[in-house]
Each structure stands twice: as structure tokens, then as C-alpha cells.
Image: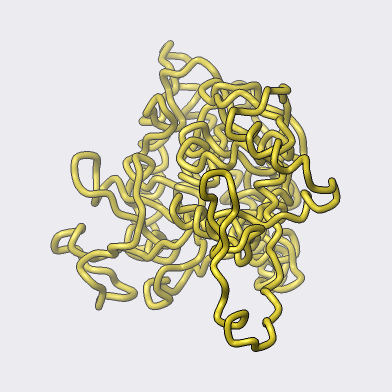
Length: 415
């Protein structure tokens, strides 16, 4: 586990009263929710080998080094292995996971610093996408996390498109608390792919209101009223579907339909059957006359991606909006976490750590528990000292504590 993840875990342990002293067992460590969550994110990434040779990895845990690439310089991202081996002891930002990312460690963004695991890298990774997360800032408020100046203690939520993290109070909507709602798209990304608003009316959470069809829709519906109801629902997508409800050789002239004769009709050859028309899910939803207010983030149920239309026209729209990955259900964070669990074998975090402990003798097992309790005791002493001095516990103070703790550990190992 990277140092930053371990710090977050230990900081959560420190939330108890500074006057409370207790020891923990191995089982209590294994059952900690923060540790379980960190394992789920990191299990799908290799902790020992740089991911750079794999190219732009579909999804992996990504980190940023504030020591090497602080704010004011070009942003850069690190894989899990480089975070552990090349940037050990540095000030690290944990960015959760990113899609289609290639490790930057040691490239031109790091000056003379070279990657210890995969030194032969290109100067830059042109296809990587960066945002202010790589400098430790998040949300529309551009604040760090955790934020010592923020009086509201709330978990942040990641947008699945831009992959930025947001405070729920800054999403512009009521945050739905439901296990069925697995993914969120922020308002900015909804507007970049406006067709998602139509899907959100029918698939995501309400509110939905009835609206009158626009003038163009009224004109189309007048023509469609001449056709049976069962025929309308199977109409193909316009401008890009693999078929069309009207022959391209037919044109309107002075209110009358004039059609050019085809080559087959002029030569008397048999007419070949037309390609099967393609159904467009998006077009059908638009004709239902429902609409939701185009404001605020949208929360989606887990399998919502499977409902997206895959006709040729819609696929082009996904590419144009840069969201073609929505058609890939293996792109989700949940799929990534599940893959990591499978690749690690049937063992869960509990059995994985317990199997590691089982290779140690009883004295070594007790030593690990003793060291953890010793660390927690030192942390409680540190917090009590701050409380006695009437000071506020800050992120900088916690970082200083762990920095000094790691320095002492290194001196003990080298002595």
C-alpha cells in the first residue's frame, strides 16, 4: 500500500478521542473499512512493476508527486509501482483510478529524475489527460482533500467522464443515497454530451416533466400519423443509421414526390433487397415528449450503459463528444475492482493478509501487531500533546508526524 493510502488509514484511526488508549488485534486491522477500500482500488494494479511498458492502461490506480511536480509545473501521473519504489517518502496525492493512462515517472516532466523501474520512456505521454487533481485540488471549488479549512466533513464523489471529484454540496442537485446508483456525471460533462440528458429523463433519477414537442417534431408527427403505430417504433435513425425510411433517390418537388428510376429498374434486373433498417433507441426516447431540467449532476444505476443506443449515428455522437468508453461496461471502476480481486485469486484482503502472516512464526506475528500498536500509541501521544497546547490538528502536522516516524524507522533499519 502506498504511503499516502496508509496515512489516510492511520488518520482515520486517529479520529478517536485523544484521551482514549487501546490496542488492536490483527483481525481489527483486517476488518477496517478504509483498508478494505484501499485494497479494492490497489488490487487491480501491479505494486512492483512499472505499468509503462503496457502502454495506455485501460484503468489503473494513479498518483501524483507533489515533491517532484508541484503546482506551477506541468502535471504528471505515476503508477502504483513507481509510487512505491521511485517516490517513497515523497508527498503523494492519491488520485484513485484513471482511464487510458500511461505512467509519466522519470520522463521530461521530472527534469533529471529518472524512473528506477522503467527508465527508457518517451519524453511525454501525449494521450494522457490531466486536470487539477494532479496538483491536489478537486471539485469546482478547486480545494484540496482533506481540506483543513472546510468545516463540512463529507465524502467526495467522482464523475465518471471527467474523473474529477466533487463535494456533494457543489453538484447542483440532491445527492441520492442508494446502492443502486453507482455512477455520477457532473453537469459540465452532461452538457458536453447533451444526448445524455435524454437518457437521464428515462433511466436516471427524476424529476421528469411533460413538455410540448417542438415545431419540427409536430411537422414530423403529422406525416407519421399517416402510418400505423407499430411501424413508427421501428423507424431507423436519421443521418447516420444503416438504413433510411425514405429512399435517398426520392426528393420533394412542389409538394409532389419525384423519384429517379434506379439502374435495376431501367435495365429490368431484379431489385436487390434493401439492408435491414436500424432501430435508434435515442430517437424513440425523444419522441416520448419527456424532459428533465438540464441542471445539476445526474446519478445513474449501475447497468445504465447497457441501455445506450449503438446505431451508427449514435456511435459517431459518442466519439464526437469523447465518451465512446461509455459503451464499454468493463470501463467502470467496479469492473476494475472486480478484475483485481479475480486476478489476485479467490483470496480476499483478509485471507491475503492472513496468508502472509501465516508464513511468519508466532514471534514475528506478535512483532507486527506490537509495531502497529506502538505506532498508534505514538500517534495518540502526539495528538494529546497538540490538544494540551490548545492547537488544531492540521494535515501538515499529521504529515510531519509520519515523516518523522518513517525517518526513525529508516535509522533503526540502517543501524
